[in-house]
Image (tube, rainbow, N blue to C red):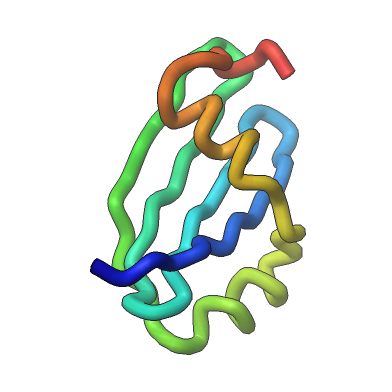
Length: 81
């Protein structure tokens, strides 16, 4: 089993926030959309090697694994932060 440190990114919009997790080896990951009404959408994603350029072009900023995982596990609800 290979240990991998994922990369995390975040972008805030007016009504929601998007958090992205990227496995830098397989380019697989997850995207969370956190709505102000508390709803959290989770999507498994498959990226390509251009994902980092795409995230930069879309003005995503590097984020923390802690924030991503708190939302993923339901320990923080949308709109609380």
